[in-house]
Amino acid sequence: MTAASLEPAQVQCLIGGHWIGRPSAERFSPIDGSPVSVVATATTAQVEAAVDAAETAFRTWRGTGSTDRARILYRAAALVGSRRAELAGLVTTEIGKTTADARAEVDRTVDLLLYFAGRGAADDGAVLAGTSGGEAHTRRRPLGPVALITPWNFPLAIPAWKLGPALVAGNTVVLKPSEYASAGAAALVRCLLDAGLPAGVLNMVPGAAATGSALVRDRRIRAISFTGSTVVGASIAEAANPLTQRIQLELGGNNPLVVLDDADPDHAAGLAVTGGFAQTGQICTSTSRLICTPGIVDAVVDATCAKARALRIGDPREATTDIGPLATAHQIQSNGDLLDAAVRAGGRIRLGGRFEGNRFGPTVLTEITPDNPLAQREVFGPLVGVMVAQDLEEAICLVNHANFGLVAAIATESGGAAAHFIEHAEVGTVKVNEPTIGNRPNVPFGGVKASSNSLFKEQGARATDFFTVEKSVYTSWSPPRRRPSTAIR
Ligand code: NAD
Image (cartoon, rainbow, N blue to C red; front, top):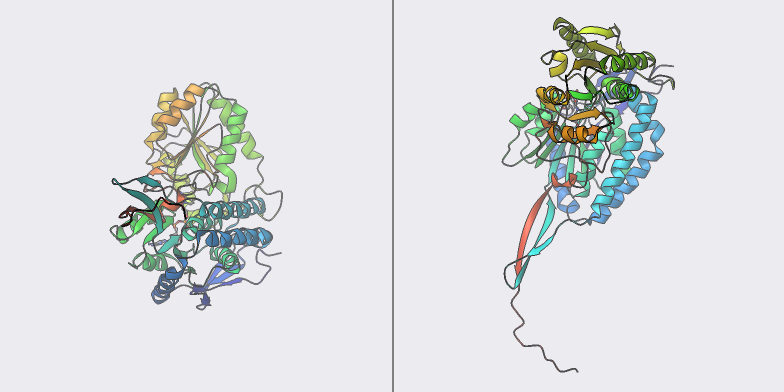
């Protein structure tokens, strides 16, 4: 069976409720190179037309009741759940995620849509003390047409965690999915349309950098929510107009797992393996650095290598496979370059380090110094570098030495050590005795330093803040001219 034993998916632009544009860019599966999709590339004119459609639809959508908007998200969640096999199959063939991971992503997408549907029915303002005799209140209003630009590694969940709050708050959307995962994104979009989303409320412009850039430069776009690499995020920040366009950037990481002497080495190794190698290390929250204190480092490294050796690398469609291929040619190149640079800088390969085509197994390097590229750059592959810290304080210094600040985890039995770590690790999320990967729809997510522009978090109860502006209202009413009669008639 080839990855795309079905006909390759045909992906067009969605503009004002119509699928248009000729699919022309062929995409091939990382599993076996067979064609998986043919994708239209939205031109600048089509991007403009998509923004036109979003602008027009905003006039009506903003006035739709929030519970009506929420009802569409509830229905979309049900449709995503009912199309689980189809959606997971697309994710697996497009980017090589194992079937188990792809199904988990579909389930998470359902949870995200349900969560944001629920938020839509929640309160959106506060009553406040006003001037004497008057009152004040706030209400949150949608911004208008917004752009969502997403990466390939969670082709359903990341669009969903942006679409949910954007739509339920009353904005209209132009979605620019990754060029490597457009078929999955299109299938998600179809669920929303089939759930009753009116034409023009959600538009999709497939394509690569030029399409995304045209979208960012359209000054009618009121907000840009971007998830992807730090370098592209920085270029978007430059291209956007900060006076009229709100910008949310969620970017890369180099996430550490600190293991203190008092931890259980086997449990800590489990955290390192899950965090480092799940989804072939292609998660923004994957563990890249394993920072251990001297009394436990050997036991943790031995156990991590033993567990990692037991992982099966293979065809992601097979139930027995733990590690699928690297998703793109760029991924193969950048992982190979980083491995070479890490070794040149003194790192010693303790496990793995070999490529077979786009198969790259779990790789552990020891003797990683703070300035080794493996400890400084984003890794985004199944590579973990081991570092030794003399104590908790030094471990925290190493954590904070990297320019990124997405997630940091610690394995310890000491509540005091954990509390100190929680306070001093310069990251957006801290995990205690949990792997660096994994987050829940109700918990805010986002980084600091080079991992995010840190203005607004995604997910969680305040995720709609980015997509709304708070309006403050003062009201005073004159008293009635005639005194009300006290007589009962
Ligand atoms: P990428 O930055 O290459 O591309 C992301 C999106 O931006 C794609 O849709 C791409 O077409 C578009 N794009 C590229 N150039 C553009 C430009 N000049 N203007 C506008 N849009 C442009 O990232 P990727 O390879 O798709 O994804 C991997 C990256 O995403 C990693 O760095 C990873 O850490 C990051 N990521 C971050 C999070 C998070 O929440 N922090 C989550 C997942 C992935």
